[in-house]
Image (cartoon, rainbow, N blue to C red; front, top):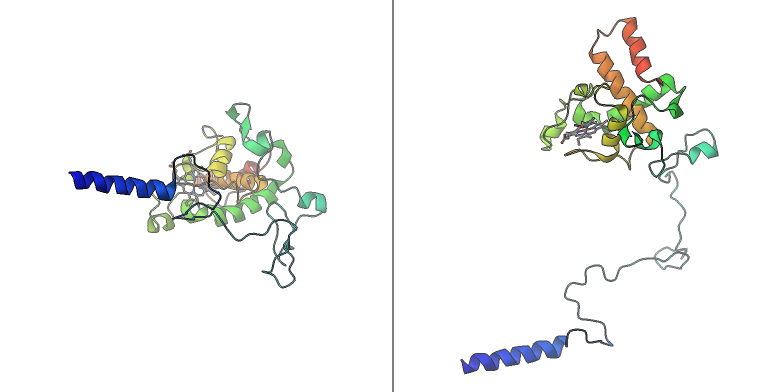
Length: 224
Ligand code: HEC
């Protein structure tokens, strides 16, 4: 027992000797067993760096790249900088009217017609079809390959009980196993996808070669 206490005393002395009392101030840097990211290579703005041969710390955008939130295909400069992802108010930007999900298409999209739908088809096929399937029935083979269960059948979410604002919310922030697309899809593209999902739902309910269907599909994308 005596040896235990002597040993204990030695250990305590060593630990306090090496680490000091709680709250002690040191003039030297602390001992870091796991330095994690305490120090990292970085360039402060406007500073020089030896990393690049021209020693310029602040870099120009790479040729052929586009800054986030900027659309080089837009018609003029004002429009180029109008690609918004979030931070603004109103039905168009949030899918909400007051505390509720809004329905119909926002007035901001008036007149965009069939172009919006085409854009929606393209974006849907890029961002949604891999899970929800090209026709929206949730039967794509990809999710089961990668273990994503319970992909929703989009034909169950008709506007009558699942308003467009709610669709906007799910696209923006996701739900359950589905992640949100607020950082990939600008606001306008989300609405384009909503229009296309509505068009898929309409098309599903009627034979394809009827003029009435074509008209309904176009109406689904127009402002109500
Ligand atoms: C990685 C696979 C994946 C992708 C990509 C994906 N989803 Fe989903 N989605 C899911 C899963 C899984 C669910 C079921 C989520 C739940 O209910 O837990 C779901 C659910 C939904 C729902 C129903 C939500 C509800 O209220 O029950 C809608 C609507 C939807 N997705 C639309 C979209 C749209 C539009 C896109 C494209 C922008 C998209 N999803 C992209 C996997 C995906």
